[in-house]
Length: 323
Image 1 (cartoon, rainbow, N blue to C red):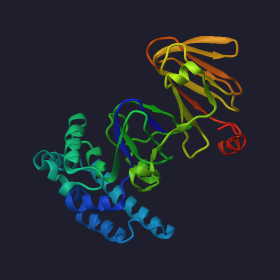
Image 2: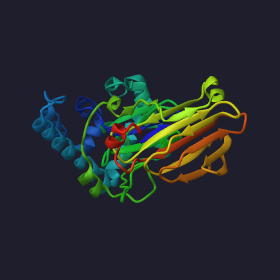
Image 3: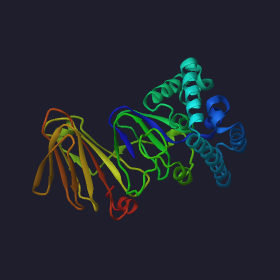
Image 4: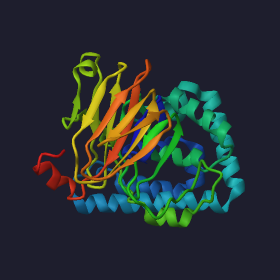
């Protein structure tokens, strides 16, 4: 899960299939490197059932998406000259077409915004495979406080901005573009879910977190405690913002551990009789069943993020009134 702490943009999951078909039809550098046959096969395979709710048809769509995406990734990995030629042509079109780039774009992103993104990304990673992969993926922008959730084995990329990222235990990070690190294209194309959906389905709205008590001073100053609760049992995250010096937030004990980090301001963290200093960049581990108290000590807003899990499982915890 990624929570924006500054304005952020990135890529998250595969686009709706009509958008991918649009780019394969109208964006010549992409169509050329994928190949006429592979592009037309994909467009034909998903035509008329791009938004199907039938599980069997949706699975066929995923197979078609995997095939065309794997074709692209193998080509850009094995043919460096083709990659350089296609990305150079792509950037040239972006610069010359402006608002008419990619036949006006597809989905919520305008042609000009697409063109500007291609130019920007090429300046950071020249002739990178990500410039072509970009047209298969959702482009997402998050304002401060907005969040998105990424399922296991879903493709994504962070482009700019600062985030608070919370991640379940994982034994791998597989990369294929927009990075100087090792790229493992074969593993990536084999492991992805190939789920496709509008970005709106992956954005998250936080809710008030009722198991934090704000004292009157904090409450009257507009301080807040909000919870980002993804559809998994592994973790949730609470953001606490104390806007006034001396404001307090008291967290009830939970049946699981927490990790808490400060991203702004300064104050103290108290667990039982132990009170420690906390300021920007400080991180603390808090054991299970411990009540936790945060108190602001400065004029700047005291902002923390607390990742936690319930050892009894989220659904059981909800039934018992813990979350």
